[in-house]
Image 1 (spheres, rainbow, N blue to C red):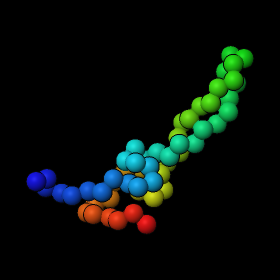
Image 2 (image 1 turned 90 degrees about the horizontal axis):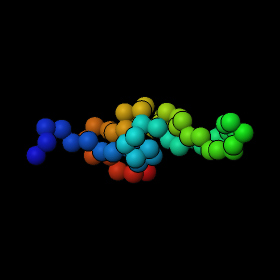
Image 3 (image 1 turned 30 degrees about the vertical axis):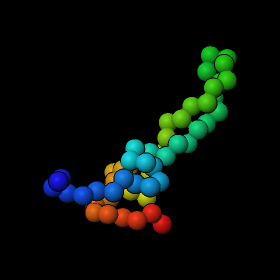
Length: 55
């Protein structure tokens, strides 16, 4: 049994970042870049202390 129980963030899946794809042209080739943006739901932690039900 772990010392602490955590819930993975339901919005970012635990990564702390949310996909934010952007169109870009790099070297004359069209691409989709995804640098991500911070998850405001978990404040980029990727988890919550305790058991949190999805809303």
